Length: 68
Image 1 (spheres, rainbow, N blue to C red):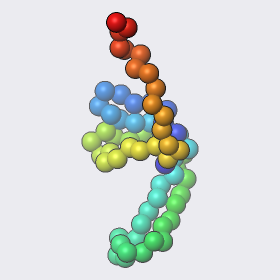
Image 2 (image 1 turned 90 degrees about the horizontal axis):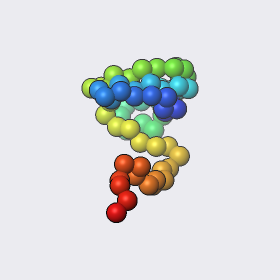
Image 3 (image 1 turned 60 degrees about the vertical axis):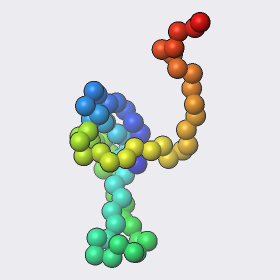
């Protein structure tokens, strides 16, 4: 998780206040996770699997649609 600070056309993403969540690969059924704060990070677009809001989302008006 983290705060989205920027992105580019290749979907490289800059996150601030990022927290890495790690699961035990030898016990995939375990609900035990470890977390560590990693601060400011750059995620390379091809390695990103999922981007999802943690605080919900809200639909906004499309600023590129021209009025009829």
